[in-house]
Length: 288
Image (cartoon, rainbow, N blue to C red; front, side, top):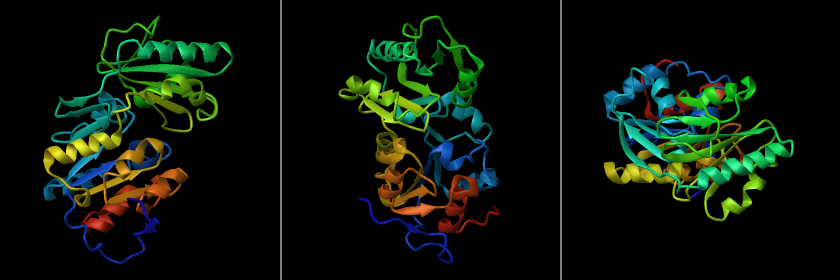
């Protein structure tokens, strides 16, 4: 599926073959949003033009549904939100699919985090339920990171015992998650998806939960082909959905594995790369 990535923005005019795009899926953090987590200029005008053309725009993120719904308040009607890295998919407030963890898995992860913390690792767990996220750590430094992605969250005494359908457990490591936290979950990696989703984040989900699986399901339900799908990503949790689209883009500065997997390159998230690429490829009359 992969090929040598090639920049598209240097070519004049719209790209041949892109006029049939019906679905655009983009990661949020590090891809659509800039490093300050800001919505890019021109997003609302772009979404209005895509809606006019009948192109479905779908954010795909590790963020919870409540956070995505807040981010796109006012334009969310008809939009499909691929939340929790594909483990919770919602459209117009109606759940299209979910992939909850089996009882006891979240508790295993929470206990593993407690053991790491006891060894001096600066890490905390976010148990991601459909209704809310749950954390045990209540210090401001940790909660400040949680608020960025989980607008609905509660501090609880025991995150291993929550009354909710848990779709994911996210771990925030103030150090390098790939070096410290992820290896500590090696036993879970044998049976579950353990993915480094950012420099400081590791997500634990069912093996069947993935952004790519969510995109494939959406394509089947809407009779949309990979050739009609455009996808943007920057990190390892985006690899699956890049495989689901012929128009797959890694933004500049993306993880090397993402760059290698994507068919094309787009400018960086700090250069409004997603919207600039959409506008050029689809020849949109939108000023960015």
